[in-house]
Length: 318
Image 1 (cartoon, rainbow, N blue to C red):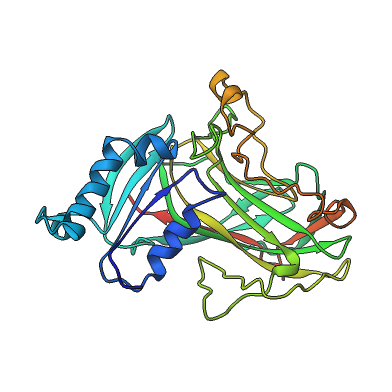
Image 2 (tube, rainbow, N blue to C red; image 1 turned 90 degrees about the vertical axis):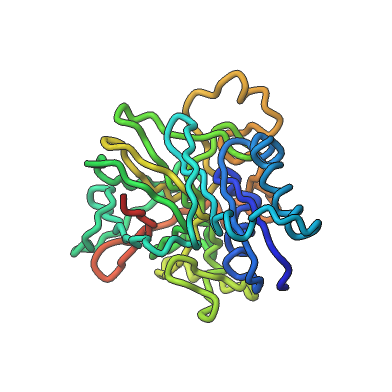
């Protein structure tokens, strides 16, 4: 398809649209394509004066032939850069992912449950209940503010006590007092920074479509696990954007069920139509699909040494 394209993504819509927004923009054959990304609820921007003005300029130019300067003035990529406190700063870019991205691996260390930019010499496993809270790995507090904007990915080495396992990855941010940072998302008032999912029996990659920052799974076959055997799993994590202030921490949680925000929910959140605890109703809890005897077992995560489990972050230099 080569028709002109304007695709508008919501940073906080992780369970629904943004994967299609970002991947569609990247893979579209059109030479006339634009990407926009915003925060907050989808309707508050996409259907507001900001969103309507953007769409009307696009349609006026391509459907009505009005010379409004769209192709000369509109950035190919228009991002609302996300900061704590529901603050967004508009910025134009030329491409996605950003060309100046510093792709940085943070290796999992099970000894201290930390994330480190240096590979871990000694490997060791750690076990968790698949339907429990899972495991959380922490980066040290930021020495200076850092922007994370773009697609993310992770490589994990895991084994299961059963013949399958669901891997839920949540990238999280915490303030110096330990309070988790969440945002009003497209369908939930307490959306985390980023999410990724993979059913281990669907771990097979398509090498032609996979990229270092975007493993691509064809989902064309089921390959059950042998209980106790270690498997290498590459997990796509949906594109995100956050400027992490100095003194704050980034963390990665690995678990076998949906994310659940554990902080206090506002009165608005309690009454919000889709308000759950971070998923906006986009849950993975169908008992027919997730039998407890298969997905409720125990999972071991291996890191360090020969098991180079890591989280890949798109760091944007200041």
